[in-house]
Length: 190
Image (cartoon, rainbow, N blue to C red; front, side, top):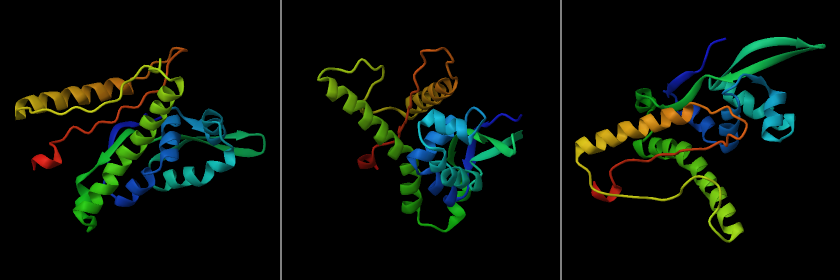
């Protein structure tokens, strides 16, 4: 069975539009491990019927693939897996003919929309308890002035941290985390 690529560059804007859906992002996360739709539904705690439209969207966009077909009774069950561990914009997006602002909005939404929802859920748990949440994690924003050399070094550290997050911890008390990063020059500095 082929393993997913580490990173897949997306060249088609329509694929990013398929990715720009929090529920589909959750399905992709489940499909890091090959499994049939029934098991994905169990993992997400949703009815199987809710998944088929989204699975077909992901399959059509090439974000998941069928890695096995097996006979279960009279039914041919398909086992799906994501095609990559992470996705990022490729140079081909520039040839889409869409204005740079539209491309930027779609690309940012793929990263920031799920991050906003995760941050809101983290903060709701925090505020419901009336005290700092005992959930590990952090929420904040920082800014500062860095030389180009320091910025490049920090960018490399961020990529290393993202790679470390991809190395899943399989022990029984593992908690799923998300790390969304926007490390760019301030818009006001341009």
